[in-house]
Image 1 (cartoon, one colour):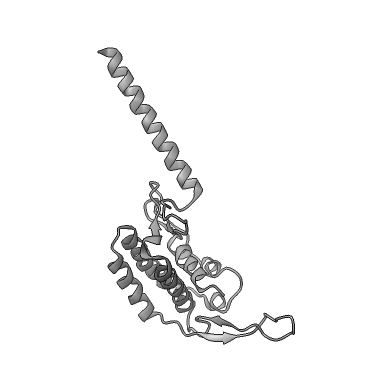
Image 2 (cartoon, one colour):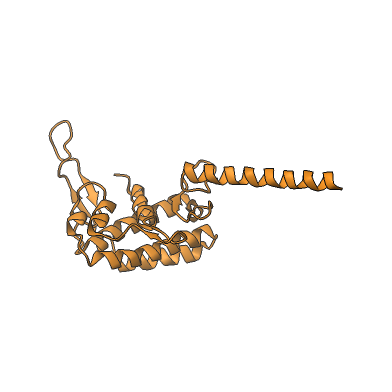
Amino acid sequence: MELASYADYAVRLVNTEEPDRGTDALTTVDAVRALFGSSSRGASLADEADLPRLRAVRTRLRGVFEAAAEGDQIRAVDLLNSLMVEYPVSPLVSGHDYLDEAGRPRWHLHLADNAATATANFTAVACMGLAIHLTELGADRLGICQAAPCRNAYLDTSTNRSRRYCSDRCATRANVAAYRARKREEAARAAALSRG
């Protein structure tokens, strides 16, 4: 299991809210369950109490991404560490569902399947994945989309550390907006020159 892939949990949670647009997709227990992806013990634990808890975690995780995007690596790490202290990983070795060619279990880790709540399960896994991503690739690989008004979080996995947008859609929108702004500026300069 690639533990760093759990960093996507953090991205998925942070991106359930678009603060600049005033939207929040984390409004139902089904939305909480959807965060887990396929069926898992954490999803089965979800209840109404997880909605405000996960929203609070979401705000704190957004702070990690924002601090990293602003270049404040120490603050990003401090914020992440405080979440990991509050939501510790309690790993268990499991062999269910996965058998090798000889029919023996393929042992793998579950990071928080014994957590008491869906929030504790999700947050422990998300923070552990984010911590691995950050320590292996660097805090500068955590970003906030630069396409206004989008403020989605993303993980930069580009080879040259150049990612600035959460998606191709946002990158295209930003590039088109920049192109149109250049054309308006050129037209304004041409109009000013022709007048005088």
